[in-house]
Length: 245
Image 1 (spheres, helix red, strand yellow):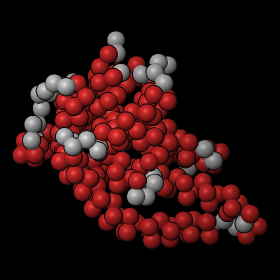
Image 2 (cartoon, one colour):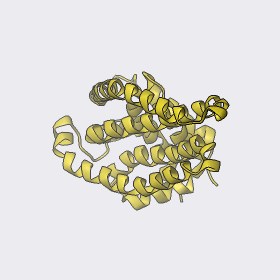
Image 3 (cartoon, helix red, strand yellow):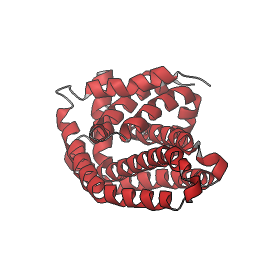
């Protein structure tokens, strides 16, 4: 497999540093506010529900196997945290998708030092929401079968112990696809081309997407992961993926 996990992870860190650039600040604020509102609302609604579900699930374990609760609880809790982080991120991405594409455009202009044909401004981004939504639905249609496969495998007792690893690997790939699609879509590349290019740099893709997935599951930090990941994916595109052969 080509690429480097470390280099891929560094793209997210580089994207986070780009967020402080004055030229990008106006295009960072809108998706960031959207993320904060969505995450704060959904977290407050779901923490109680997750706690209740986890308690009911663990209470179903017979008393003579009560020692298993201490083994199962961390696995189930971590799985729920990862899934919840992904869910929140998906909702934020769906609503803010045209602004994320605009941020990717401006980030690429900053990185390359030349204009990129695209949305240009907030008015054009809002007008382009139907197209952006259509692109997101294409991605979700790709993700759904993968999620169902991992979900079914997670229900099989021998596999349950490694369920967090499976969800993490799936999340890493999904996050790479999700964010790299923004700069590539700005260049009118198809979704099939996005997947093909990422497969050519699979290790870098998993390194980038893996760190995004980890941060997405961390409270507070997940507020900022979307704009940082958009800029990081644009760095990934400019410095490595656009040079793929």
